[in-house]
Image 1: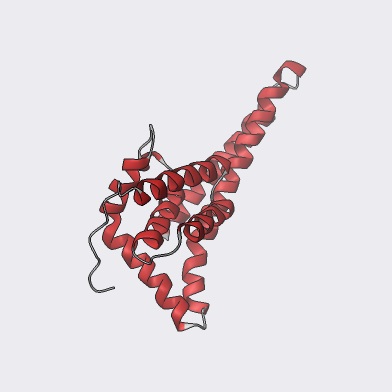
Image 2: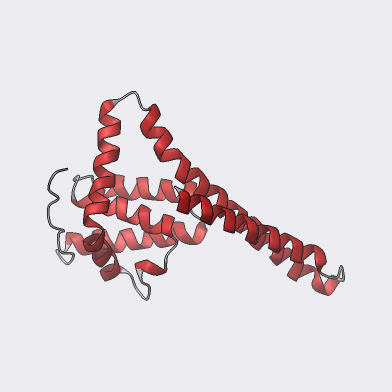
Length: 175
């Protein structure tokens, strides 16, 4: 949680700097596109900061407030599955990514992909449901580029898995 808050603070500082840079630009017509880009960059950084902050605060709140024991158990089971199988999951995702490495993606996008893989492989969630849930999370917590990346990676992952080209992770003990 502390890491997410620190990152959110850094993103907000970046957004503030972009806004300040845009205010310091000359007001000439030839500078207008550059000022607009600074404003867009600042707004995007602020949106990412708020999304990251929201994500870091929402899961613990959900777990504390959930009246349904089953919801709590499923959330914890998925979290444990990701934590215990992260290296294998990351290798599987890297295997289907084209021209990218999972480590280059923003953390929220990596975590959404990891959760989707856990849902697909260990909880036998139908591919359409797992992918839809991942895209919904991306709609809420990521940006447009992240949504497209998540959708594409999961499409390649499910296709490769259907062809038996993605090795199954080792079963998780104690979950």
